[in-house]
Image 1 (cartoon, rainbow, N blue to C red):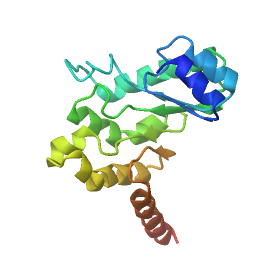
Image 2 (cartoon, helix red, strand yellow):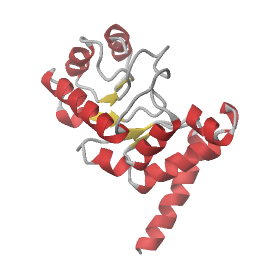
Image 3 (tube, rainbow, N blue to C red):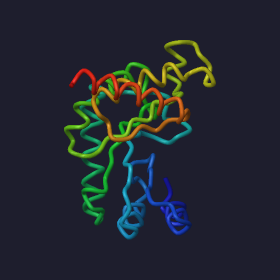
Image 4 (cartoon, helix red, strand yellow):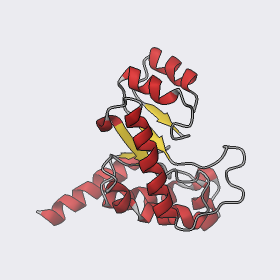
Length: 181
């Protein structure tokens, strides 16, 4: 979220910036453009400490797409290469359970924005709200979100359980390839 932290991370060898604020820091785009690295522009509204209060959307999918398009334009205007921009709908960041479900279901629409899409639904609280599972027992729900995302070929998944998710996706891909053969 902070350009100074991103700059230090890039100096230390990072090769991608995942900005959960969607370039809210006015200097972030300049730092990323100067580094020539990819940037994940995530949708969020409000401050981290309070964003889960008073959540309001008229149409969450349309509003998130519009906000992401504006943030992408901000990135490009600041000199970030259009091919370096990845969009993230911000699952769990200022969204209610129903909003998160709609956004995951809307992956095909997000892909129409013309940029790689990252979905980060792993272990999120909406899974706990739907299943009553505490955070340590949310792998099955996380895999369900990964499955939906894989169905629509998102380019990136942010996950906690890397090995389990990799195995799941390998089997998913094998089944999908067999169906296509």
